[in-house]
Length: 104
Image (cartoon, rainbow, N blue to C red):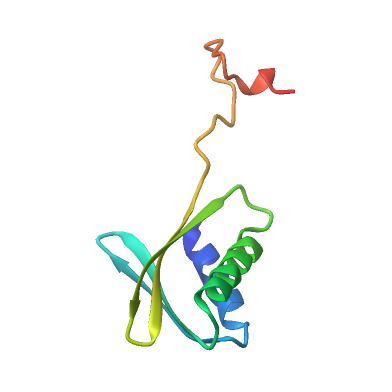
């Protein structure tokens, strides 16, 4: 799964909201940060980010995590990432207690 496609969809969905004036994604030390300039409150921005992430992940086995970092000039800075859940997705044949075959 190519996360670049997910990030592109996320940017599209995020910029489709009228309250979002500007959006920029920067990777610093391998960690993705998003800089959002908006004409609404911080709580509304976080809700928009959550909705945009959900739309871009639809149909995929992904999760997202968004952490507010700081305000900078006219932007709000968030650490945002998409990640694959850490769970077994196939049976390895070692009779593990958390085997996928034992799920209900």
